[in-house]
Image 1 (tube, rainbow, N blue to C red):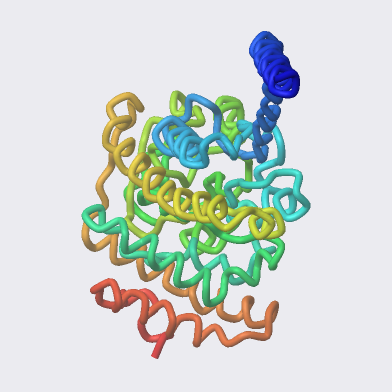
Image 2: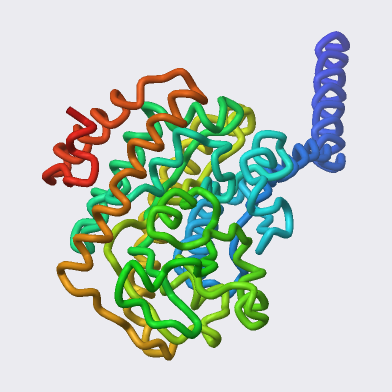
Amino acid sequence: MKRKGLLKVFSILGLLVLVAALLMIGCAKEAPAPAPAPAPAPEKPIELKFDAFWGPEYFAVKSGVMPTIKKMEEESNGRLKFNVYYAGGLVSHKETVEGVAKGVADLGLHYYGYKGGAYPRSVMLDLPDCFPMDADNLDANREIVWGLHDAYLRKDMGSEVTMVGAHTLPFYRIMTADKKIDSLEDLKGLKIRCRGGDFLLLESLGATPVSMDPGDIAEALAKGVLDGVYWSYPSIYGWGGYNAINYSVAPGIGGTAMLWIANTEMLNSLPSDLRKIITDNMREMGYLCQKAYWDEEVRCFPELGMEELTLSPEEVTRWKEAVAPCWSKWMETMEAATGEDAGEMLKTLASLWKEQGYAIPGTWASLAE
């Protein structure tokens, strides 16, 4: 009996110990949960320097450049950020290629005409009838520029820069301050502003070409340093100086092209998705800027206050005949400077015209045979 009693006592004591232990565990403070891992720091955006060439209120900046920059930043989810510089605030208009090649700017507008003969292949873009200049098919102009660039013009700029966009401008016109232009003879000796690449064309017409940055034109016209300009309506409207111009004539002999370029090393260093965002959107920006120019051509004319002169059909023929030798002169200087076959370049140009559905113009057709 004593043994059974002791067992009973021990059983009760064990039960009590177990209950006490359970109570202690229940009353014990709950162990704190591990602290959450700190949120990863937001990825720092890649900042790129964008040289916009024009001022912030310029129509092509408002309609093409800034919408494209905003779109690229949005598509990158903030991984790209563009710092925009206006009107030569980062690199001068004449040194865009050098500035982009050295990384002073990451993207910019290459207006090769300012370099004159420094880009011997690209001079062809300023020659008469290089593009169809069809207002109803502006894509054709851009495709021809891309084709020429991929085959030849990229060599002028070097491998440090990559073309990412292009567009052409409306027909250039000869706009004068005081003299009406009705014939070739009226141009003799007139000091006409150009960029540099169009020296050949103006000289063939009998004018005296004067190379000048766009920002200096208004003052030069006001002081009589210039008698006129070889330019487009949107350009003179956007840069100023049209108040000193009274007459305009459009012989329909040419326009020009502008190339958007990027620093090649910067572009290749980007993740592939960001690189594609830039190349796709910059190519599209070429279309937006081109459309802005051609739209502005119509919109701004009433505000220019110029009398628009019309050449007779016979006079137009004379002008075209006068400028046709520009092509053979260019072929000679280009071949001397590069050692390349200018005839092959013209055959490529002819092929590009045909691809876009256009007949080869008589201005240079025989030279392309």
